[in-house]
Image 1 (cartoon, rainbow over the protein chains, first blue to last red):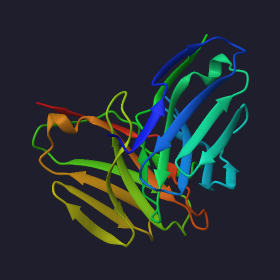
Image 2 (image 1 turned 180 degrees about the vertical axis):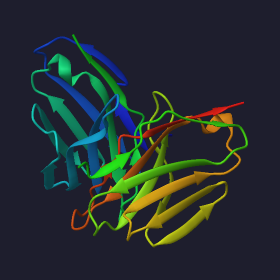
Image 3 (image 1 turned 135 degrees about the vertical axis):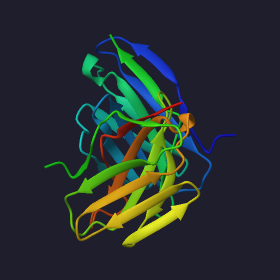
Length: 111
Length: 112
């Protein structure tokens, strides 16, 4: 089984809808991250969490929110989806080193 | 100036050649440096990391770090078509505990 899983893997939604992307990990890592990837722009950090009680904004947090339900679970919500949030979203985890391990990604399309 | 910069490519090399991928960073105090490989539509996977000046070798891959010049490079020897992917450079900036800044990636194409 994969160490970092993301659900759903693909999602098509409409403008204005609220959606949630979920991430779970079995690596026992405290640190979890949400990124989005757009062609030519690399990976941009949305939110990150160093433990259940610690949530931090990344460089592009506007329009997003997160919840760290447990050490192993970190969810990303789009409160009111808009077309420019169409992207590939990755969850990542890290332990005591800085190396990050990525989930398989969620391809989100907002119509 | 972007914090981490890479040439977007595409970089095209013939099979068996050495591919050289470069990355520059703006923060002189940066501490940790990573190379990830990403196949189209897939997630990034770690190739190697380097913390100290000099070379670090792992099989066909060599990472080179020069902190004085603020660049890190990845050499791929005996390039194979299966090496065709986008290579992401990531840097941990000074005093940015636990966060990595990613470059935009360099697309590598290895031609048979």
